[in-house]
Image 1: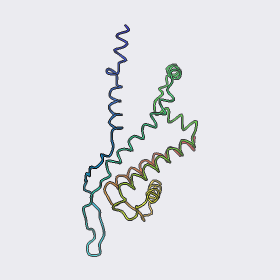
Image 2: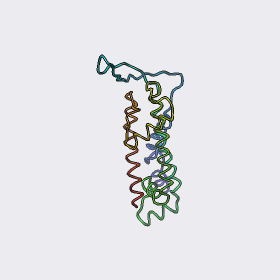
Image 3: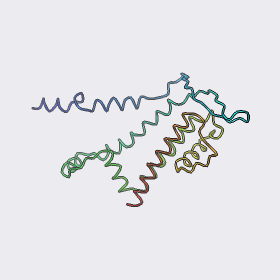
Image 4: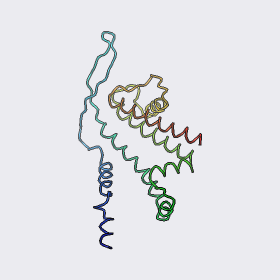
Length: 195
């Protein structure tokens, strides 16, 4: 029976191997030094003679944005910290699973203001860097990190004054991600304030 128990809980038999490979791939993503890769993107500029003119430019920083997938490790760390053997026994007794969703709910219930500030800070700082990284070479409006923060906050709250806007395809995708992330965070904020 001991050999059967050992085989059932083995790293190679359980789903731990799958999660290890996924986590390894996410953590292995990095910019390859001294390699210039080029992705064609279109910039639309208005001209008095023609309504729209398209010129080809190259974005060198799209792979560097994939590094931000590592942010999920923060939630995983919080889950691991809350997952003690005593808590597991208590959870089995009550029929509760202590996973990432439970951890996030518990953090919002116990520390609502701190959790919201932390999530908004991570979102603003991370997404500002993403838009700055993609647009800084091609967009006159986003030449500094501060203008990236301004664009992120204004776009995140769906105000969108129109003074700064993305001109590359990568910038437009980052803008879509900004709006989606802030919509979810605003829903968390409303749910926390109502509760």
